[in-house]
Image (cartoon, rainbow, N blue to C red; front, top):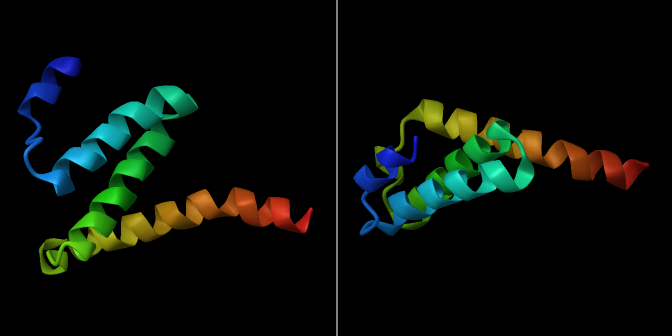
Amino acid sequence: MMSQVKEIDFSDFTIALPAFLTIVVMPFTYSIANGIGAGFVSYVVLRAVSGKAKGIHPLMWAIAAMFVAYFAVGPIQAAFN
């Protein structure tokens, strides 16, 4: 599985950081969903901030928004309890 990492373009920060976060967050949180979510959200945010927002597919925006909601549910519930 790690053999695919060599094909990631680490010279482009907007590609490298989401890939790194995806790889690192999965084992630290024991959750594949958290790792994938971190990758989706960071990819969309970095591309939008770097001025490449037009290159992001609308489905990516939707999935990133859903992952933000997924990550926000726990802290919101904790605030009300």
